Length: 348
Ligand SMILES: Nc1ncnc2c1ncn2[C@@H]1O[C@H](COP(=O)(O)OP(=O)(O)OP(=O)(O)O)[C@@H](O)[C@H]1O
Ligand SMILES: [Mg+2]
Image (tube, rainbow, N blue to C red; front, side, top):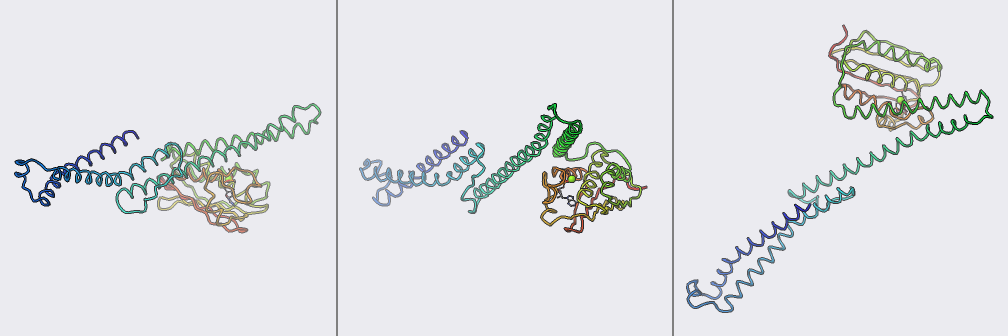
């Protein structure tokens, strides 16, 4: 910032000096014209008071005009420099007023305003993220601390003791899932391409995910329809497994008893397409547009378990795998997720 100020002072001095130099021949010219005296004449007979004062006045007038003009020219930069100082101090509410004008400096100002807005939005997201994380941690931690306190009492029955211990275990598992989801998302945020790629059977991986959740869907008497041919895929096996487990877990969670979940996949033209659909509660348009945001949960989801991180994680995994995910859904009719993945080695 100091550098900029010195630069501006130097610029102003340079302009003033140039103005003075330009004004000397002009004032001589004016003096000659107005007083009708030749230069030779002036040198021979010496200068009259008028002939001395007039050029001095013209020089002062010129210098004054140039100071005003140069101040006007550098003032946008001074304003920008002060605004930059504000940004550095963490005040992102700043914007340059003359950004709508035409010309180079105005374009600079527009870009500056854009930068300030972006920084403000990022700061908001960061604060929002911290408050979400704190909130999600607070609930299980206070439950664990409450039940641990109850366990300490000697008057409780064995049945209650067992129940409290189960609750503590359940909440601890929730915390473990929350931290591992957050870690995975943060790791994937800094990863542009998938690091580990190996060939594996994608069809078997999806079936395995269904099997691992069998206790959940059997308990709700949900029917599973699976139609997947043999698909060999090259990619990060552990990462991709999380895609299926999260999507199937959601389908089970948001489908009521005796519902139906269909999983269909095929590989064609170098692309694997997987469809996971359910006839559960479905989602509104508003919910559909926000489900891939971290910590976002639809209106009815707060009643069921979760932190709103599963689909954010799924989206990031598909991004680093070069894939995509889309959803169509209707409240009361169910949801349909379509996942595409580019294949390096398709079904054989
Ligand atoms: N199959 C589905 N049917 C209806 N709503 C769904 C379905 N899948 C996702 N949603 C909606 O999208 C929201 C975000 O899903 P996401 O998987 O990210 O979070 P979650 O399941 O609530 O929690 P977590 O995955 O962290 O356990 C859900 O809360 C729900 O509102
Ligand atoms: Mg989920």
